[in-house]
Amino acid sequence: MKKKYQLCDLCEQPVKVEGFSLVKPNGVKKFCCEGCLRIFQLLDPEQNSTPENLEKIS
Ligand SMILES: [Zn+2]
View (cartoon, protein in one colour):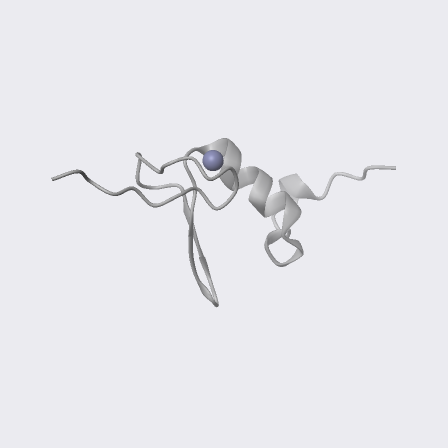
C-alpha cells in the first residue's frame, strides 16, 4: 500500500519528515521543511511574535 503524505501548507510538497508543524486554533499546519515553517510564520501576523521576526524592514 502506498503511504499518503500530507501536503506542505506552504509549497504543497509532500510532507515526508514529521516535526515541522504549527498548532493553530483552527488546526495543525504541516510543513515539509523548516524553511517553509519559518516563511509561513513570517507571513502570518498571528505567529509573528518571536523576537527574531521583529527586525524592522523600512
Ligand atoms: Zn514546503
